[in-house]
Length: 113
Length: 114
Image (cartoon, rainbow over all chains, first blue to last red; front, side, top):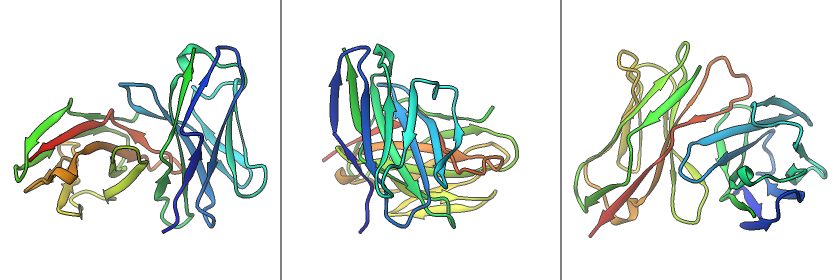
């Protein structure tokens, strides 16, 4: 059964460093998403991506964040200069056009020290 | 704005007990409602959904009914198993969102003991 994969499973970085979180969505999906969950808090929407551009973003998704689909298979989230408060579990999801049902990856746990 | 509120966890039950996890929402119009489950070490998986009032979603013995009058979508199961131990997330998709973004509750951890 096709699934969304994410790498790495855990990333530790120093404050101010750049990180790139990687996701491989399901191959025939057209909609791509990033969500995050700070420990003990809600899963929060960050950004959606369709037709090679951002279709919607939350107020969390400021200039420090960017997304890219560089090669038609990967979908990446970059944080340019990490802050302590960026420590969270980051989930990638993809969906097809017809149902909007979203399939989630296992998440990347980002720890900023 | 749109929001989802779930009951606090963890919920600890014995095997074969009845499960209810409460979920209420605030939204304009009539959103679609979802329950996702996250097993240890895995991603969120769609458990069930309902797209209009009075719809009942069901899967793997779990059920939830879309109640417009109480703005609720409570998750129930008649007899839980140890394998149901997981984190359960209630979520909505607003009709005003053309991107399908989901708004989640905070998740409820269920622990089922043999």
